[in-house]
Image 1 (cartoon, one colour):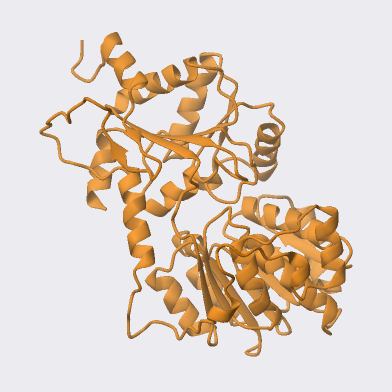
Image 2: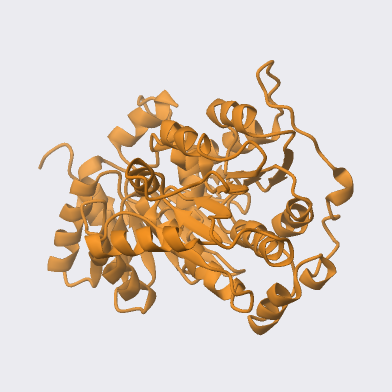
Length: 441
């Protein structure tokens, strides 16, 4: 037997006795057990990384290069005060759509951001996925475009998104909120055919109130002269930190230079790294900063980890799935090649699964996501391409087959479960390679 193999008894013990966490996500040994000494280097667990991120997020960072940010405490509703959409100065058409959709109460990010955006102020929103930030900027923007004069033959608002999936989600939300407003909008993202590209070009020529776009696709249109942003008076950068992580900083700055100086700039991000501060300093004017629940997983997530060898991850995963039929499960893996390999392995074992990675065409991605949403697929095996921007509220379990690169990725991954007040489970497998990478953080 190889030194890297578990005995059946070891595997059973490891899978049935993961390290437990308390309700705050802190690792704690089982009652009556003592920690086992080990000669291996101690690695920070995802929970510890998440706690460190929370400490950093709550600690103000003072820098001579920080952008000038104004705060307005009077706009912040007390934690125990409920704010209703009808209490805000939203247009009647927008309120009618919210009424039809049975949306009455604001989330904290909506209650605090909407009044500032209706006043035309630049704004930085520090909020993670699942806080309602999409509606926080769509609702006031639709109201402003509805109630204030804007040219009909121009692009009036540009919303930038890091991924096609998030762009699609934003566009779907926009269609619902704008139902009564007669707002023209177009979604612009890569991965489709030339016919779609031509449709986008024609939409630009006719004028669109709102464009939802990924940076790469929009740059293509700008380089071909298909798009004029000289009269675009509102720009929203959603998940700005992710766009910078993906290398879009130069593209974003190129796009912003096409806009007029007199504009409203809105930036939403899960974190506030130096690059975001630099961007804010260059493109925003006295922005209001709103911080909401930075890097804090939902309280109803049952978090646990398995310390194991790398080649024991798949047997442990199979054991977890053998405890009960897996349904509404996402398995995150660090590389697309490993996603493909695990998908083949689990399919051979009879599991109903599908792979999601960047090698898929847009039509293939759409087919996989639709199958997962419609419960035709039980297990979605994916890279971080779906860690943000996936709009499914009933995910029961998230498994980090590979440990995430940093605390924010951990929070966004497990944030796919326990949404909309539901409970969920998050499991992270920590192998030898994971411990090495975690020690570097």
